[in-house]
Length: 226
Image 1 (cartoon, helix red, strand yellow):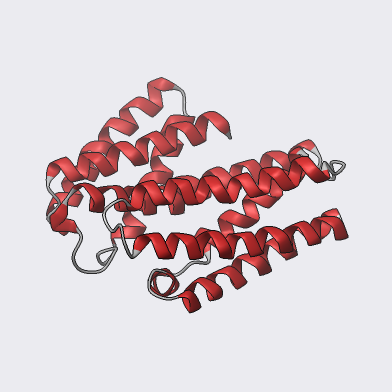
Image 2 (spheres, rainbow, N blue to C red):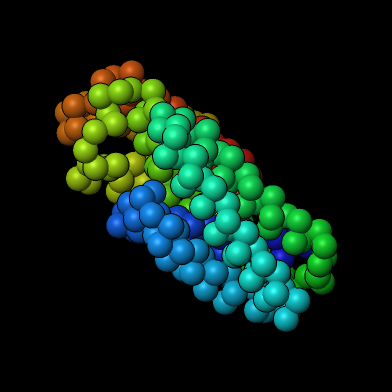
């Protein structure tokens, strides 16, 4: 079950975040056709990843992909009526997706196919996606919910997302090191991050601190888990 669940989560993370471009994210937030396009991409990744576990796992990937489409359609409908609670929808959305994956893992309970090294590798890949792609998106959603002035314009400003992704990875690295090395690195990164957010995109320091805290927490949790 452990290998199956981790592989499924990795496939979900790749399809739902790594391969979701800004254009796809915009389309899925506006129309069901965008949700369908996104769901097809997620399904393709999940089917390819789960084929190693056999036909039952492929069938489970198909079922979970259909549920992914249904969940995202429900999220689209809710977003049209409640526009300033996106962070809550994000958490509920991901909880629903992971719940479907966990249920599939419990029902199938396939035999492990990975060795310890491969399992550790998959876990590390999931952690890296969380601290870069997932954390950068969630941090921006939260500040847009909290700060009205940040809700206009494109979701990410120019170069903002890669800056946040690199920062998340650096926080993860700092939290993975022993305290004598990691703590000074995290403190220096925090100061530089707030300064960059202020000067490059005119963020209020309070908004920069919120993003900073979320990226740092994601880095710490991922370093503790991976």
